[in-house]
Image 1 (cartoon, rainbow, N blue to C red):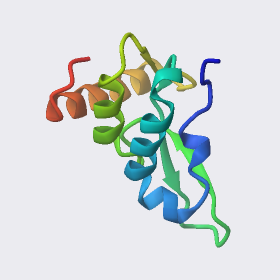
Image 2 (image 1 turned 180 degrees about the vertical axis):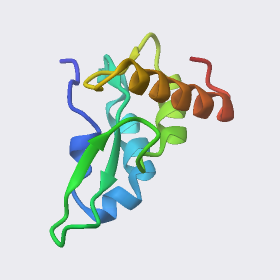
Image 3 (image 1 turned 90 degrees about the horizontal axis):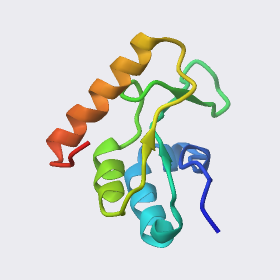
Image 4 (image 1 turned 30 degrees about the vertical axis):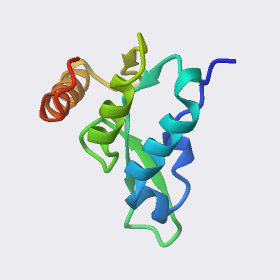
Length: 110
């Protein structure tokens, strides 16, 4: 059964938010062969609200550990990384530039 679950919805608390690299690594370790595609998004913890609220935002604007994400993704065979739900071509270009820069930094070819 292919895995269609998003890593972002697994970030359910400030503890996981601030340690999301560990959670990402653990997800890929446990679920790697079942992962069929990945979506490039980011997440931020709203600080203007006393209740924990996590918002999905453009890749590179949040706290998702893309170095871990891309390193783990690179270990899988033929798994596409897609961007979606952005508001403009500029946001897509901005996210792609950020993802490629992190990929270059961790020596992952995109």
